[in-house]
Amino acid sequence: MLDAAQIEQFHRDGYLVVENVLDASELNALNEAFNHWVDESREQTAAYGETLDHRARFDVGGDHSAEHPSLRRVASPTEISPAYLQVAADSRMTDMVHELIGAAGVRLHHSKVNSKLPSTETQVKWHQDFLFTPHSNDDLVTALLMVGEVTAENGPLQVIPGSHKQPLYSHWQGGRFTGSVDDEVVERECQSPVECIGPAGSVCFMHTRLLHASAPNASNLPRTLFITVYAAEDALPYGDNPLPSQHQGMLLRGEETGTVRTTANVLRLPQKPKGASFFVQQSGLDAAS
Image (cartoon, rainbow, N blue to C red; front, side, top):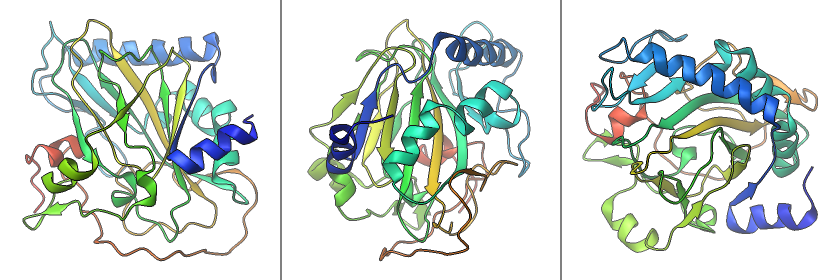
């Protein structure tokens, strides 16, 4: 699936963008499901639906309305869409993740759709995924599939190349899990970001420790990402899954080894949001303390 230069780039920079990972029929199926969810959201005024842990499946932004929908998160879409399950579990994207993790096997940890509909306020502050999903080792890859075209104007993912080799920065401030690094880290480490853009069907593969963020969508083009987090077969999760589903822990590639591999990391365990998603944590509006 990937050549040696691409795999080398991923390990050097902590991310890799690959175009044409999915074909038109796969993309059409994903878009059809998501457009249906957007239409459903017009009838809602707050987060709604229910996941395995009884939190809302569909999260909407503060600027959401029937005329101006702001559906920003669909939790565990693999549970409610065969098309999303197929792409996450058995596609060219899955094969590429297996090559990048480089372990005996790959497990599905969780999945979600993060969307920025046209001219919506949703943004993501600087953070590292591993602080949300700590494991016994950090051979985890986040695959961000561009369901539609991602441009410099519609709120693309921004990354800091090489930051996956830096320390794990605390995502706790003032005794609260904020889901983001503090301002000092942003000023020191996040001033030269690279934007990850591409046509529909592209995937940005990102190391779990990489610093990343994204700005609001100021354009008329929606930015929709299907995000799937994968872990090496021998990586044991610490704490609750932030987005539990019936598919968590599913072995997608390789074989069960019955072993756990550990690497040296020191971190404070995350706090699971009581609200629909980490957006409420980053905005300081979550009820968890």
